[in-house]
Amino acid sequence: MDFLTWGRSPWGEWILTHISWDLFWASLFAGVMFFVAHASYMVLSAHRKRSAHETDALEARLTSLPERVPRHSFMARMFHWVMAASMFVLLFTAFLPIAGIRFPWVQWHWIAGLVLTASILYHIIHATFWLDFWSIWVGPKDIPEFKAEMMREFGHDVPGPKPGKYPLGNRLYHTAIVLAGIAVTATGLFMMKRVATPLFVRDPYMFSDSTWGVTYVLHGTAGVALVGLVIAHVYFAVRPEKWWITKSMIFGWITRRQYLEHHEPSRWAVRGSTTPKVSKTH
Ligand code: HEM
Image 1 (tube, rainbow, N blue to C red):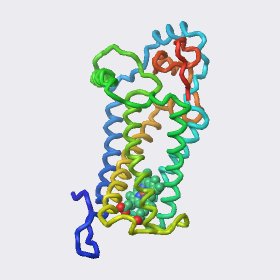
Image 2: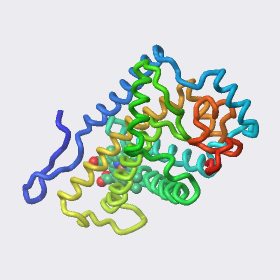
Image 3: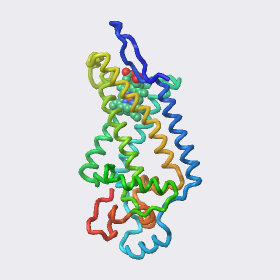
Image 4: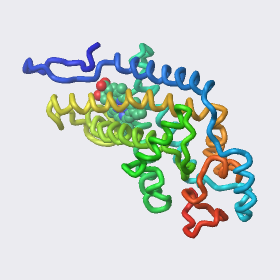
């Protein structure tokens, strides 16, 4: 399978033009295989949440925890759904024509691209100044937790705390989506100079042919990666044992019981979790 598509410049040189669209089918296939493999594995796996008797004990101790624990503020939820809508428009407008369904897609694509870019900018500002910025990132400090998680996946009873607001898997996923998101929006904004838009004068000569080639390849690679990443995300959102998290992205809160079953109160401090530092709960 070729990963790249090449063309000839007017001067007869070979230049990069796109990624090979076989990669789109490969990413779609990988996304579908991932959920088949994961779903089969989940049939065998013990779902790991705090035992009922441990949760009862915590609940009896933390009496001032509210019945509903806020998880996502209204603005955080708005961001999520605007971003999700623009992402779907981008994926369908980009890949339906490649799958053979032809329609004038470019205009819808870049409009959704601008919505996605604006929503990402909003999210960066919101997360930097209003949310607990570091709660979503991964780093070397997470290696012991990663090892413990892996051991538990393989059926070993390894002691260790429950996650803070975001489990390790969610934080790794966020890192992947950040990298793909930055690459696709940065390149997409430049690519708008190649197509006719009412926003500015078209200038396909802004970059050399080879720089455009690299830009299109980066855009296509990130776009194709997003196919697999979005499939995995939607798959987890619709799995019944994750509905409590999905519901919190609609209504904004989880129950006290869910908070205690799945989180470590000292690592995600909310009102009533009786830790000295009370962080923001968006
Ligand atoms: C989920 C995110 C995105 C995906 C999956 C995606 C995918 C794609 C794909 C597969 C192409 C065809 C590229 C080629 O022919 O080599 C394309 C073209 C294009 N994309 Fe995106 N894209 C995304 C985000 C964006 C964003 C955020 C923008 C702008 C801000 C954007 C602007 C463009 C433009 C202007 C083109 C047309 C280029 C042309 O026809 O010459 N895209 N996109």
